[in-house]
Image 1 (cartoon, each protein chain N blue to C red):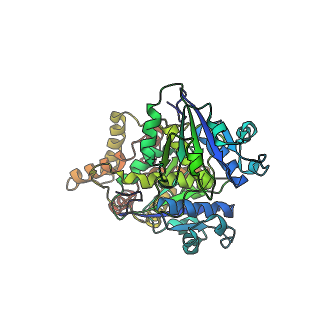
Image 2 (cartoon, helix red, strand yellow):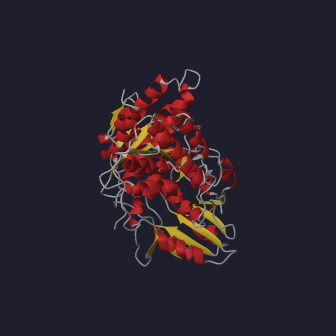
Image 3 (cartoon, each protein chain N blue to C red):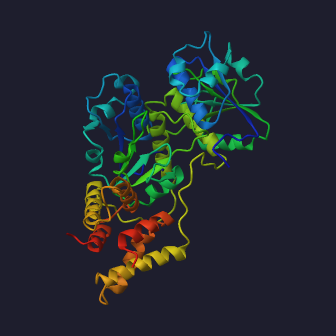
Length: 235
Length: 235
């Protein structure tokens, strides 16, 4: 078994509002080092040409990188999304790296998995985190400084590629729904809770995040969705 | 055990003829991330000021970095030196990362250990490799590109700090409720669904199992339970 991501899964790296072109290039190089190819950028402008300077021998990844206007668009066809965060966010608890790798390992063959990384200064915002199933944090020796963006991507992908070392014949989980359908289901639940006045203007944002975290953690399958919709009532 | 290098040993990072000031700064930042402090530069000129730009929150490491005129001088007071190489060099076979970590682990407490990294383009030359005890190579998915200098340092130090099994300063997830309380909550949900005639005698066993699976997977915390009970109504 070589050093590469599980060939039975499809992986995507998603950079959200990256600031530094050099970092984008370094991310492409790190992806190549670790055997990844699919890069999506959530960005309101074209890929800056300086990114190519640091993307040594990884220009092809930049050339094929897709620009998206929103995180939702970048993850809609994925089955599970892991978001890198420097610490717990309100309503979005995060896993240690090892635990996140365990969750990833449990996903069945054929799963399409995204790794979400935020802007260098702000990280991922709550509205962006809602598009993830799991949050994870890379270990570090001190609170400051956080990892550089390209470093966070590199450490994450390196560990994913090392997983192929094999962890035994664990029965795989059923494959989750595409993120867009997970989101549709969560939105229907939210709607239902609004109708029941469980969610009101006063607690809307808080509840919205809590519900996203709670049901996101299920990495919802089609059967889960059917069950949830039946529980909450389709209308 | 925290995320940090073995406190019983002393560690040094040695950069040999580094070309890019930005890389030197990124190395300092990576050292800080992984809990290292001692940096030596084998360099024939003063530390360029641009290095400080990328050394976010790690300027102290740069300020204390020592300039040496030769590799021999930089390692003379160390007990063991590990040199990072992209591949075997003539007469200098290299270890896989895991093997190098084993060798490091075997060194007794009190050992002073150096990690040697070469110039971005040329790597370490044979004359420089002579100052090392072991050579090691980081796994990568393809021959090209090699790891960026700061990336190679980061991956190496990250693994050295992980040897202790530490997870760093990540706060743990909130602890799940005792199983009996998780079960109480699930039973209340089931009861509610029976009242709503969502669960009937015909589907009882099936639904019972499905609901247990669905809500069991959350590894429910106290906050999760409160949210679920509020959603489903307490009575």
